[in-house]
Length: 312
Image (tube, rainbow, N blue to C red; front, top):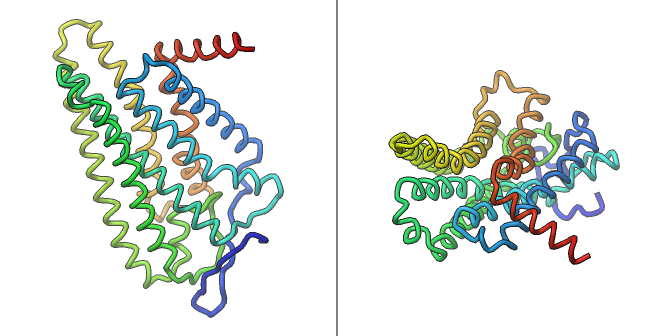
C-alpha cells in the first residue's frame, strides 16, 4: 500500500504493514446505496433542526448530536469499504486500521452514552414536566452532550492504545469489512489478550451502567404514562418516546448479538452480517425512525425545501 506508514512486529520477527479485509459478500452498490441514504437522511435531520427555531429544544438538540454521530460512524467504515470494493482491493494500512478502529469506537461509544442521556430527557419530560426547563436548560444540555462525546473519546483512546500495542501472532487477515475489535483481538497473541480483558471489563461496566439507567428511565416513564387518565394523553406521551425506544432497541440488540454471541456459533459469514447490522443499519435507519411519524420534523423539512426552491 503506498500510504502505509507504520507496521507491527509479530512473534516470528516479521512485520505487518497492512491488514486484509473481507469484502466478497457485500457488493459496491449495496455499500454506496446505504451510505448515500444515511448521508441524505442524517443531513436532512441536521439541516431541519439547525434551521427551524421551533426545534431548538433539548430533545432535538440531542437528536442533532445523534445524527452527527451516525454520520461520523458510518463515514468511518463505509467509504473505505466502497473504495476497496470498487477497485477490488482488500488491503488497509496498519495506521489506517488503527485510525478506523479509534474513530469508530469513539463515535459508537459516544452514541451509546448519548442514547442514555436521551432516555433521561424523555424521563424528565414525562415524569417531571414542571422541572423540565430547570433540569434540561441549554447549558445543562451542552454539558451532557459534551460529556457523551468526551467519554467516548477517552474510552476510544484507552482501548485503541491498548489493543494496538498487543503483539500479533496470527497473520493479518480480518474476516470483516472494517477493523473491528474482536477481529483485531483474534490476531493477537493469546497471553497478551489478558491485558485487554481488563480494558474490556471497564467497558462492560460502563455499558451495563448505561443500560441500567435506560431501563430505569423507561420503567418510570411507563408507570407515569399508565397513570395518565385520558387515552389521548397516553398516546401523545408514548409517541414522543417510541422513536427513541426503537433506536435504543435496534442499537443495543445488534451490538449485543455482535459481542455476546457464543464463539461456537461464530463464522465469518455470520460475523460479517451481524457487524453490518450494528455498524451500518442504525445510522441509515435512525433518521427514518425519528421522522416517519414526527410532524415537527416533517414541517421543518418542508420549510427547508420551500426556502431552497424559492431561492432558486
